[in-house]
Length: 307
Image 1 (tube, helix red, strand yellow):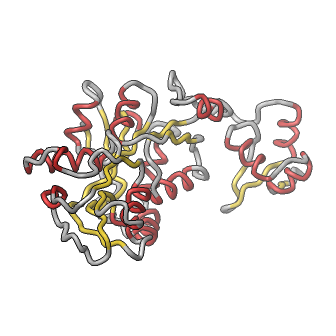
Image 2 (tube, rainbow, N blue to C red; image 1 turned 180 degrees about the horizontal axis):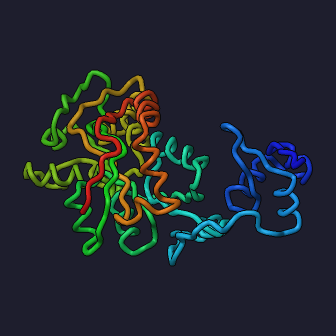
Image 3 (cartoon, rainbow, N blue to C red; image 1 turned 60 degrees about the vertical axis):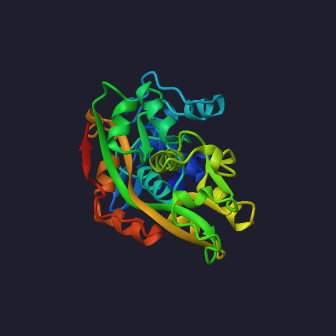
């Protein structure tokens, strides 16, 4: 009889960690089967691995000519013979998605390259990433990636606005209020959606950067931007609503609700290794988990815009 072994039993036999067993399975080096929701490895599959005989057909590679942006990421990425590079800044919803991808049937290892919205689309255009997570509107995406046929898969919608001190003592409700003499701003880095959104509001209102104290003070995350308001070094910063919940001394002044997209070539949606992104995001379970975790609006999650 061909006995079925658990991952822990295989780890004990090979004298390796259980997590290493899962990595071997993910890379296709060690065969496995699903019994209900549990992974099992047969004696024959284990013997094939020990002898060095491939136990599964190789997983299709999507690496192409893609290379991560730094030598450290490149080293980690090349530990896998196949994989997907996703550019985008960390968020609770994205972490939840990547956690589900790692155990989803047919998925590939995902390397997250931490880039802001503009640089993520730039990397996608120059084939340094397979997917970009960004909140830019479709027209912006189209202008940054001319000639590409893209699919924008909606993950969720969220509100951005101003972080201000509790009680809003400076009475900051619009971009015009940032030009007050007693108001200091903490800005975001060039290329981030927050910076792009702020600059457009300023242009529409006829406000120059020289009129805003602290316009040149940059941070690279919503958390660090909110922290400057919390510690009193700034009176206002721009970011997403959820981050303000971590601070008891900060209020959030909403400006607009915007979508978060996963952007990829339109022919990628049905490809092995990439199709799990669509399948997970469109699942009712994922939508419920995002809402419970973050409070994001998932009414349009899973919808696709083609450019």
